[in-house]
Length: 232
Image (cartoon, rainbow, N blue to C red):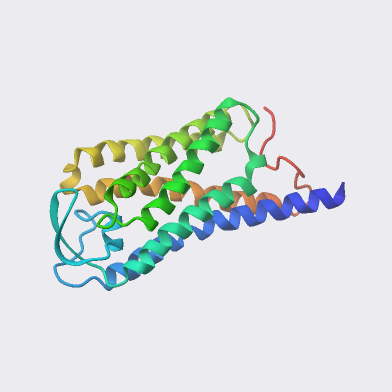
């Protein structure tokens, strides 16, 4: 029994660490953006994945002409893949935090698709296979809906703060996605895409820290199976 409890605590800590480690995504973006050549990369106008385009110069992607030159595209694409893997690994290592039920199962499934989408975006840059790249991009929608469902699953527990956090960030992400699909909101698709994508990372960071803190409960009372799942 004690051994199983220690194993559960280790999984929770490792899962939380995986979620926190997804912040490497922002470091990779900053580094790749700093190496961009030619006309400046715009946070408002350029999509995140423009940093992963493998060509350099004026090309058309999905019929839309544009300028791309990211010498560190390999770094950015590797970061997409790593981020997706960390999202999924953290989700399943911390799976015991979610209540049993259909909402949680659907939420976990959608967030898994979101992680797979990140991997697909990294493996298929927009100028290489736009169809697969765009399919992977749908993972942003999956992440936001997944947060809403997981938040709803937590609404009847003592950890209602997770529900409020998930709803707030999920709704913000979906608003950003709506503007992104309109293509010209906020002066460019880049800013709208970031409003759609980044709330999930805030969610991962906050829950990752929460999982680690709960596992390292100073009273030594970290739960063996459901460290955050406490009935109302």
